[in-house]
Image (tube, rainbow, N blue to C red):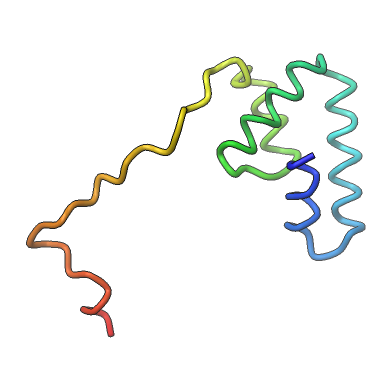
Length: 89
């Protein structure tokens, strides 16, 4: 459901979204339901939207790979080379 909503939000016109959703229906018919849903969950976890991305996940069997628990911590720390936003004003 989240993938469908994201597809509608990413398209300029609803007709474009319907065409993408027809492609998703074809994928759902071609692959096992559990695999298809796992691919959609993976795409949602990484913020990926669209038919091509889900198809690639299914073709490369990435839906079986574990999802990360949370976003990795930021590696940017404070040091002499970090100028900050006030530098660019």
